[in-house]
Length: 149
Image 1 (cartoon, rainbow, N blue to C red):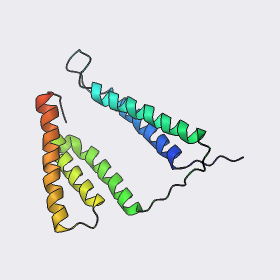
Image 2: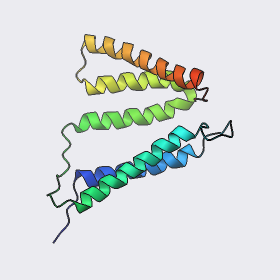
Image 3: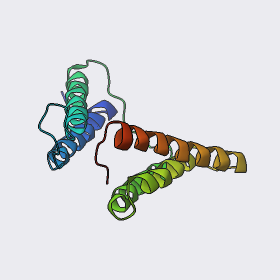
Image 4: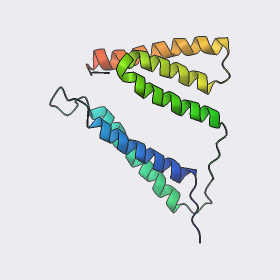
């Protein structure tokens, strides 16, 4: 009886590795206060929740009696482009800051999702990327007074 792993197992595995990396990186965040809700609390919480859910996905895939679904990449170019944009986002975060790199990342993500882009999509994507990034920056930097790169 051969066990064939499907997309749920591999997705859970990739997400578990990502959660481990997030947890490791969240512990490197500079702490400015000495209370429970310091700068590293929310990234650590997100990493722990991602780890719990990814382990649940792996266990569910292993215990499932149904035939596993093989992985099919319908749009490998878009997937590759999105992965590259994530890497560029992380690389640009330090030199140009959170706000500008987030605007560029959200804009690129919107264009990748709605490929091929039209003028209307470009306009809406630019408005959304600036607005969403600015609101998130205001909430975290101004309201919660967290240090962003």
